[in-house]
Length: 107
Length: 199
Image 1 (tube, each protein chain N blue to C red):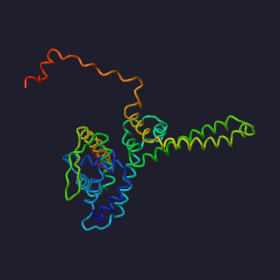
Image 2 (image 1 turned 60 degrees about the horizontal axis):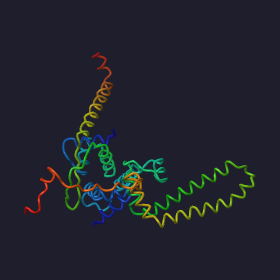
Image 3 (image 1 turned 120 degrees about the vertical axis):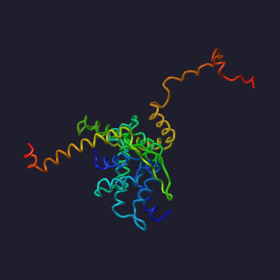
C-alpha cells in the first residue's frame, strides 16, 4: 500500500472527513513530512473507493465551496489493521538492527 | 467567480470530463481551502500537482491498449471501463472520435491487406505492379467512403453501440416473446385488490 493511501486510511479511521480535513490530518499524522496536494488526494480517494475501502458520506457547502465527506468502510478498516500490523513488524525488525550491541547483549 | 477560482478551474481541465462534472466543484473547493488567504495566484507546485493528478486520472480511466483496440474493432468492454466508454460514445466530441477511430481502423485493415499482397508476391511480379496503383486508389476510396458513411450515420451507430456495450447485443436475436396474456384474477389475488364498486 502506498504511503498516501495508508495515511488517508489512517486519517479516516476515526471519523468522517472532507478533502481539506484529510489533507490536514495526513500532515498531522506524518509530523508535517507529507503534504498531500489536491491532485494526489483525489487520485488516492478514487483508488481507495474503487477498492471499496472508503465511501462518500454526505456533502455540505461552506462559504460557497462544496465539501464531500468520506468515511472508511468495514473492509477498509480491515485493510488498515493488516497494513498497520505489517508496518509495525517491519519497524520492529528495523529497530532491532539499529542496536546490534544491545541485541547481542540480550541474546 | 474569483480570478483564483477561474485559475483553478482552468487547471482542472487536465482532468477527465466525467470527473470534472461529477466532482469538479469539490476539487476546486478543496484547492481553494488549501491556498492561504489573500493569495492571488495558484503556486506553481500546486498547479503542477493538480495537472499531474488530472493526467493520472485520465490514464487510470482509459482501458489498456489491447482492450482499446478490441473495443474499436467492435468488441465489448467490461464494466470496469464503462465510465470511459460512456464518455467516448456520449461525451463532447463523440462524433469526431467515432469518425477518427473508424478511419484509423479502416486504414489499419487496408494496410494489412497491402502487406499481405506484398508479402506473398515476388517484387518483380507484373500482377503486383498492376495492383499497386489500383490498390492505393481502393484504399483512398474505402477509407474516405467509410469515414463519410460513419459521419452520416453517427447518431444511429452510436446508439446501437451503447446498447451493445450495456446489454450485450444490439438487437434481440429472436423476436421478443409475446407479452403474457392477462388471466382473470382468482382466489386470494381477487380479494386483495380493492373493488371499485365498494367505494
